[in-house]
Image (tube, rainbow, N blue to C red):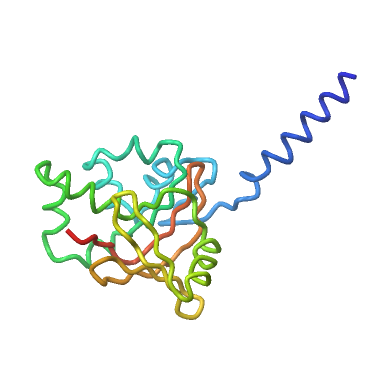
Length: 184
């Protein structure tokens, strides 16, 4: 009887615990992104996301992005931030601009976990476009050109997803090559 109970518990754990093992580790910014770690635990190790991590800290969003989620994060690289007009990042990181920084950063976050295939399916259902409501209350528009996934912000700015499906314990990150800006 004990053996049968042990086997049933082991089988349950194998079947329902396998999802985290099935997710692959992806390299981003020279570091492994582990599906067993949360968004912040992984992001701090990416050499390509030091500006984003500094901004998340300055905006007091670390605890939020370490939370249960799930979240879909469109994570701009350092190069994406460098495309902004000179002085923009420095200005946003000032304490007096914290609210604006929070709005911009949460504009990159969608509640729920949307892998690339989920977004592609939504684009197909939307006849070429998928509208996604962000945590900040704005809207992002996803679309595809060939097999490449793009996100357009409310100001008409475009960002390409350069690395999709970086799974986290509390969601998924899609690396993007431009900062997305909400209407203000």
